[in-house]
Image (cartoon, rainbow, N blue to C red; front, side):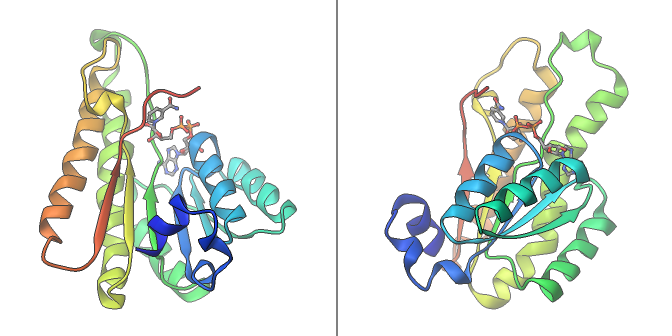
Length: 203
Ligand SMILES: NC(=O)c1ccc[n+]([C@@H]2O[C@H](COP(=O)([O-])OP(=O)(O)OC[C@H]3O[C@@H](n4cnc5c(N)ncnc54)[C@H](O)[C@@H]3O)[C@@H](O)[C@H]2O)c1
């Protein structure tokens, strides 16, 4: 896959491949999403930065523009299914079909299970799990049509082992892994590829 070459080889980005890459990252307005956006921007990808927070996304936009990278920014709440489908339509019209979808947006309230409010738990599941499903449903069709695409989900070590103060979060990160594994099985007979990324903790 082109994207794997882009990630693993510093020489590929100068080839004509890179200009074909439309890399969409949710949660690009901060943290690891922004860092990924910057790094892929440097490799020559067309970055599609998506975030619920326009101020953070604007900062990412300016940083990549400042490095003469290619970036488009969109405000979207990944938990809002209609908004995600509208985003897919807009991106396809204004930028082109997404080649790599990175489901990165996520939250991590950290406290004992009995201290989590209902609202917190519902938001966590909505953003970390359901949002990934809406994104997959909205962006997979064009990948299937083009016979070309890559989907990445940001899981965690908390998706591999239980950790105290992170009971709901661990559940969502195991879920993210399960979704990606099941998607890989479902697409197994196709030549397309899916990726599950398990990160460890970072600051
Ligand atoms: N930082 C870590 O230590 C760590 C470790 C393992 C996995 N992760 C995972 O990596 C991902 C990014 O983590 P981070 O620490 O960079 O997070 P962060 O809080 O720094 O950034 C998350 C971004 O997602 C955006 N966002 C939140 N809700 C959204 C929504 N409903 N729709 C669209 N965007 C939304 C926020 O505005 C923010 O810009 C998350 O999925 C997280 O669970 C993080």
